[in-house]
Length: 389
Image (tube, rainbow, N blue to C red; front, top):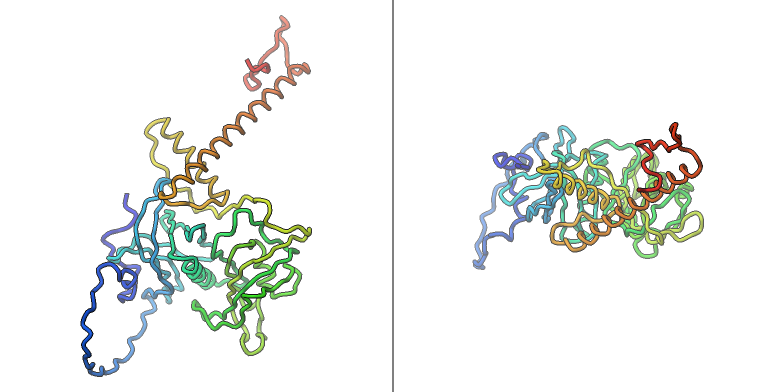
């Protein structure tokens, strides 16, 4: 099954060769000539007009990519991952490409686009063909930088008039979401936005931290509302429209009027409004649902179909619990979780069956059943045998 058009070349990529340097370590030229050569000054050529219909790179990096095919991770190797922009249509998208510039996947970015960071510097998203990709970034900072670019382009692509948040790192599994009225201590850095580009830094508090109560009007609206749902130990970007920031007046000399802003925020402490310290009890986490479920293979037999359905249910449950979509190299942890979830399912079904039998027996003992002319109880198909025989 083909997931890209090998004849398409690099239609989603810019005509320049600047993206090729991501693969410079693979067969690059070995420079050994250290002799000085005088360079003849070149005449400056007039700048070529920019084609607004040509894709322009916004952010790019190299990743180790895995594509989920029929519920299984398939390694795609080292790929280039680039966020592109077509100015004429204000279109933004992620493109994944190989060393020979073949496009393997493309995902259009909008306000609702879901880019989900996971443990071990992984992140997952669905492309335009509704195929799931799991990308492994070189470091936590590389993942955070890419997430920042995603946050900015989500904001710009849809003309957001309030604010949006974008996770930059996976929070701890036991982290409790921040709610209105909670107290938090955060470390942050703020920048101006210059369209789809990061502007000048105007504020930073990465040492002592800043404490406030969420939803009490002590900070700008973008913070009061954008902090809701963030988690202790997590990291996110909050992109704020001027209407939810400093408005038409700005703030001092560093924030001009009508400025859109972006903040890199880390929640260091979180205390709920009830007075308890949040983060002690595990809470199930529900990620965004994909456009459609990943296609399952055609059933070859009833046994195979049942096994595939069970596995799909378990993988969906793993996502609900906030577990990472690990690649095939981490099969041991995945198998252990699979075994535990199946055991929980069996225990739950057994308990439900016992409860049903107990209810049926109680109905029988209380005379809730009907009797025929001979005095024998009439057992309906829905009730079954109340004695369990």
